Amino acid sequence: DVYLSGPIRDYIIEKGGRFHLRWGCREILYEKSDNGDTYVTGLAMSKATQKKIVKADAYIAACDVPGIKRLLPSSWRDWEFFDDIYKLVGVPVVTVQLRYNGWVTEMQDIERARQSRKATGLDNLLYTPDADFSCFADLALTSPEDYYIDGQGSLLQCVLTPGDPYMPLPNEEIIRRVTEQVLVLFPSSQGLEVTWSSVVKIAQSLYREGPSKDPFRPDQKTPVKNFFLAGSYTKQDYIDSMEGATLSGRQASAFICDAGEELAALRKQLATVESVGTIGVDELTLV
Image (cartoon, rainbow, N blue to C red; front, top):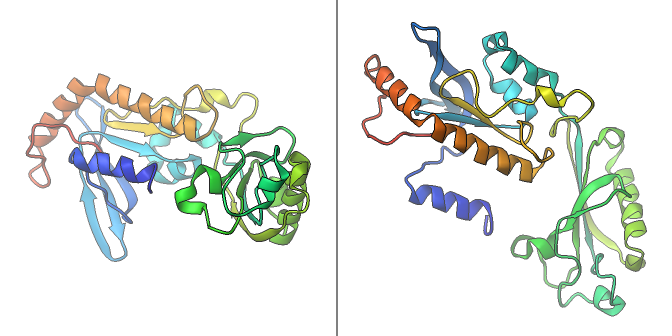
């Protein structure tokens, strides 16, 4: 919230954006024009017993694979574009956090690795082919505002994906295996103790990469005139990752800019038939 999501939120609010926090999207409302074009007319939202419809000129669904499958209207599967998304399968992910009484990734100075007065080690997101976790980071170093605790050491976060072999295991066994692999990667951490641990299992998260799966990844522009996609599962040059999600958002933005005149024309068309919830400003709106 300090370094990433907070500044992004503040920037959007300063530009006139609004956040509908804790509101869930229950249904995409849509219609067809006389010429056969499909367009979104609003999003049916709910929070507890409250309900409302949010309207905009352009809609972006920034989801993971399981999320977009739940969100899309079933009738849209008549389009091959949307039906292909259902051929992508989510893969289990297990995230393990380990708090140590020293600094695991400090490999040059053993004395510095054993002290708890000052954070030291590799301040970066790390990757390895030699462990079951594909990427990991010491959060006490990379995000000290949120995770550094005075008098304590590394908070190692390890992401196991695909996590299929680990899903049925008890947390204690998962922690034991990950701890052993950490020691193999960083022999200098021998003697450090795990003082706290956490295991979070997600049944479906990233999509399962495999032969012949890439053609099923959709573009950000869809057959629905004012509906766009974002998410790292969509077509972009990176793997299914935070970086890929960011790039997909930039590509979705470019498609929206390219469709500006078409969206403006659609807005005028809708304004002639809608008397409730019409937008009374000149600027295009986005949700």
